[in-house]
Length: 302
Image 1 (cartoon, rainbow, N blue to C red):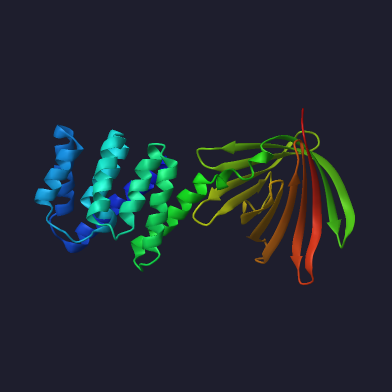
Image 2 (spheres, rainbow, N blue to C red):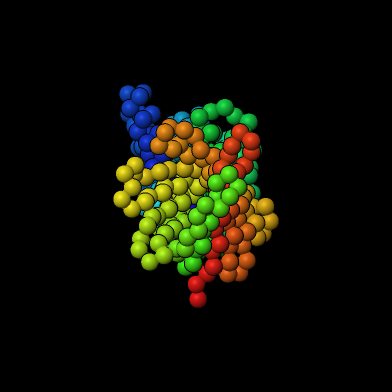
């Protein structure tokens, strides 16, 4: 979850810089945050709140550029003082109870503290408020909230049953008839830092063939996919895949991409798994319906 918090901290800084430049005025918010930060460094979070209550020049809500919001993320990012950040961001909720961002920001510190169940309540509260507003920042909050919920529900790991080394027997079909049968192997790994599923394809002779990288996009609840084939002249093919869990052992993947003829291609992947085998059937979208184009039988190596 740290990557999302770093992103929010960067957005806060960008908004602050843009706002003060646009208004061509003294960076009052920046000065306020520095005063609050110095008070925190000297006497702690509660003293910083006293300075804020006494000297805050602007009672209008400033969104992500609010001094308390900026301070809270700074304490998380630079000082790694989660308890102090919790105090600061909780105070922001008390000051602006009808705004969405304070609840979302507070959920971030709860997530960093490992209080996931409590964080969910604040994310849901933030989403409920943001969905009633029509401000650009509220749109960002909705995206962030949905992304956090998706990651917490392990949506990025829903295909991790594929991790491992597999023998792969592939049958290719055309007009309902089998036209080719080949054997190969796949080595599949998961990079938790980037929520990436990485598939390395080898030929029957264990020679590298191609690579597929699937990166989970929590905002859209889909995987962004890049497919690279060795010595392929057209370069990298990109697509998007949405995953539906039909049952605990049955998944449906809907894939969309643009081919080399600038045509949209839609594929449906039907995946059924057990402990050491996976049946993977792919269908191509036709005017008459779905046509089977390939069937893979994956068997996990010893």
